[in-house]
Length: 339
Image (cartoon, rainbow, N blue to C red):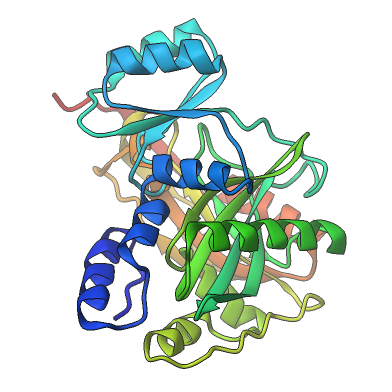
């Protein structure tokens, strides 16, 4: 029993539990998919403590902000791709959220993890993702990916391997992810852990009970063992043997260009042919079409175009990233918000 979809995890886990197949037990599943339960368990285990409160109404959000203190992040307790995720720095931000958000589900108010650009370097995202594969309670590291800077407010724009971290920092984040996996009770399957660098050290953003999006493609192209194959091995009861990509080859990446922080209609797209012809671009998925509407509140799925490729080193990757953003041009018109 295996799924790579966040929204199918519960069904897959319930079926596996019912017929005795390897997978996340239901208590572990709750901690992997509900952010409030995950924060509580990580704090109880002494792995990572971030101030948070579970909320169901705007009035509860306001009281939680008063107790936690600004700045905070407001996000759904269950969700992916930073959907409906807001950064609230001051009273003006909070007023805008009150006017825009209709709360129909549980949300979480968390203290904002202020980033430290030092470990990864100022040109890159101040966070990484760490994949582990677990079998009978033993977790093994698969790969750690570097990140491009987030699009506002917290939308992912892509990953690359190898990261820019030194060996000591890599060991630190990989160890923190392993501690979190153990604390949450994971015994079988692939996990995707996002770690933020802060002035107080690395902190857990969240742990997901499935493979991270785009990770397998990067690992395969970089010369590592396919994480999808390892997930299938666990599902059929075989112990997997991870093999990370060599860190001294090309830098392999997946990069997404996202919409502005607004709800807009696309009026024109330019630069696609030039983008396809660029050295270092292996493949491109052009999602945006004239006439289509994109909304930043859907999170990282508000992508306009995703580019897959390689570069000789991180300096070359930075230059290629700049060229990609200069070449791809999308024109927009404001689109009224749905009633």
